[in-house]
Each structure stands twice: as C-alpha cells, then as structure tokens.
Image 1 (tube, protein in one colour):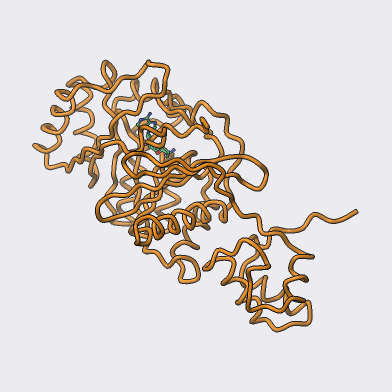
Image 2 (cartoon, helix red, strand yellow; image 1 turned 120 degrees about the vertical axis):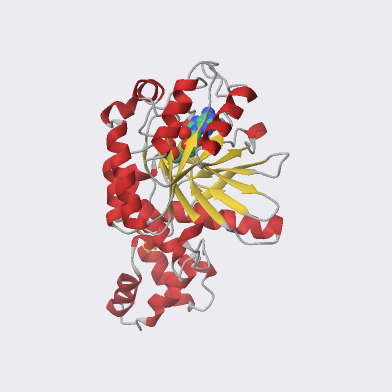
Length: 346
Ligand code: SAH
C-alpha cells in the first residue's frame, strides 16, 4: 500500500531544511524550495528549474503540492473578478478581485461555507464544510495579485477577509496565512492593508488584542439593539452587545487601532430613529467609524435595502456626533460577487 503523500506546504522552512539534510543533501535546498513554494507560487516540482532532475523526482516521491485551482472566473461590467476556486478535495470557495482607480482589493474566504447564521447572507445558507488551510487562504491572495498585475498592471494593494466564512472561527489558519502574506518570504505586504471582518465574537476579539496583531478589524454590527441583532444574526444571542463592546474597548486599549463597523440599513428592520440613536451611542463608546454597505439581495426577498432618506438620516446623525461614516457602493453585483452573495451559484 502506498502511503498518502504529504502536502509539502504544511512544512515550515526549518522542516524543509531538515528534510533535505535527512536525504543527505544540503539544508539550503530547503530555502530554495521554500522560495518556489511561497514567493514564486510554483504549482509543480517540475517548475523548480534550479533543482536537479533527481531532486525534483525525489520531492515528487515524497510530497504533493495541494494548490488551489481557479475553476471558474467571471468578470463584472465594473471590472470586479470573481474566482470560483477548487480545493484539493474538490470543495469550492469564492474569492473576489475588486479594482478601483487607485487600488486593487482582494476579498478572500476563510471557510468553506460558514458556521454562522446571518439571515441576510447567502453564504450562511451553506453548511460549514471545513476551515481553509493557511496555504489555501494564501493562494487566493496570490492568485488575485497575479490577476491584478495582468489586468491592471499593478500589484494587489489591500486584502479584506470578507469572503465566505467567519475568520475568527478559523483563527490559527487565518493568522498563519496573514503571517505568510506579510512576511518577506511571502508577499511582503503591510498588515495595515489587511482587514479582518468578523461578525463579532468577543472572546476571539480579545485574543486578537492579546496577540497584538497589526491588521485592521471590522465588525459586522448591523444593529446596536440587542433584540434586532439577535433576530437577524441569531448566533449573537450567545454574545450580548455589552460583551462585544467590552471586547472592542479592550482591542482598542491594546492596539490603538480604530474599529470599523459594517452596517446595512434595511427597510422596516433598522431604518428607524431608535436604531440610529442606538448606533450613535454604541459608536461613541470606542474610537470607531461606520461603513454603510449597500444591501445585496439574496433572492428570498425578506430583506430590502432601505430608502435614501433613511441612509441620509444615519449619515446626518453620525456626522453630527463626529463619527466618520462612509457609504460603500456594491461591486460585482451582476456576477453575484458582492458582499453576502458568495454561495457557489455557478
Ligand atoms: N463573517 C465575516 C466576514 C464575511 S461577511 C463577517 O460577518 O464580518 C462580509 C460582510 O458582508 C459582513 O459585514 C456581512 O455582514 C456583509 N453581508 C452579508 N450579507 C450581505 C448582503 N446580502 N448584502 C450586503 N452585505 C452583506
């Protein structure tokens, strides 16, 4: 019986160096292979042109490279690209390239499906199948960096963990992927250009703070009224808003990094004065800003974007309390690539 070959990218650089020594070779070969795997994104041992044929064969005998493969690519009329990405076990996740005049942002997934149950999100209708490995997260970023270079003549500039899944429910792998993305041996990207978006899990937000992470944090708030939030994001019944608030204050005390609240305004749900007042009050308890995101309908019609008047009421109230508010237009709606629309439709 043949043993299952190991994914070579689960090895650290040290382990790779040790492997070569155990094969009677020089440890620096480990560095060479590591560079092929992580900086150059090699998909096969064949590609590793500075290794001898015998060495490449030896690697082939011991390992596989479990690379993701873009299975399906759709381009929106606004230039947004959605990648349906096939994993080594056949499961599929989606990641999105979002271009603006000056930047390219990658929106990446952290889980196959999602463990949470937000009523307004298409991904939540899928069962959570599994967490993504660090290299599967990293590969989504690398793929989009390459697409940005090809299509826009510039490297990727920003990353948001706003694709499928809840990043803080896959804490270690997301951290490991970000370590790789920001290290010189990976993409050497500044952590300031990376935003992790969470639906708000207090314990894990505290952990981020204790780990002194350098990336930015966004929290999907959508309502600062307990009852309403529990209704539209049922998992949050386990996490009272006061706990979330305390965790966010703790985050700020440790990182001095302002929190972004993501917020959709829906007709009949949170477009009233009480909701606006509650949000203003919540925001005033910590340095924060608000991104008002446009709702991307997900078929069942239960949720509808509120009218402009309601949005303007929010903007007026927040601004008059010196809270920064930005209105975010949807991108890639025509190909179901916008926030909350990722559900492997194709
Ligand atoms: N689980 C993480 C990241 C994925 S969702 C989180 O909850 O933050 C990314 C963002 O899209 C979140 O702010 C989420 O609330 C929002 N979102 C989900 N469904 C949406 C929809 N149909 N329209 C607009 N935004 C949506």
